[in-house]
Amino acid sequence: MRLHIVYIVLAGVLVYGNGLSGPLLFDDETSILNNTSIRQLTPLSGPLSPPRDTPVAGRPAVNLTFALNYAIGGLDVTGYHVTNVVVHLLAALVRWYTPAEALAKAHAAGIIHRDL
Image 1 (cartoon, rainbow, N blue to C red):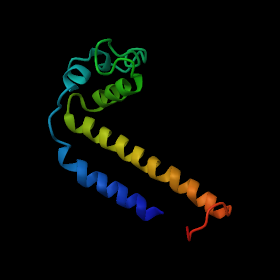
Image 2 (image 1 turned 90 degrees about the vertical axis):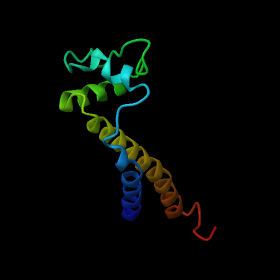
Image 3 (image 1 turned 135 degrees about the vertical axis):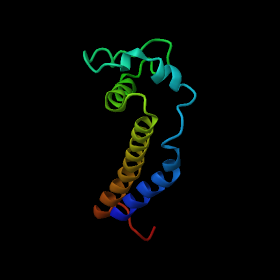
């Protein structure tokens, strides 16, 4: 099971690694560059209340991660891209692990058999 984790992480790094230093694109101007709610972490109501009429409206967790990125590295694009890659890799690992674990438990309980 651990080898699958290595494969997923390796695939993610190979696919996304070359874009870590790329520029901010598309909605990044309104979501990051012009978003004053990410400039300070306190009070927490600031980053948890993204501006209306922006791509982060109604998405406080996304806005909070932007605020954390800004607090750590300002507008350095690498931090935003690394965070994005980590979030996607974690999602891929959860997406792989959940059915794999369910199938393993079903097999152990005799509900399914390997020869099917």
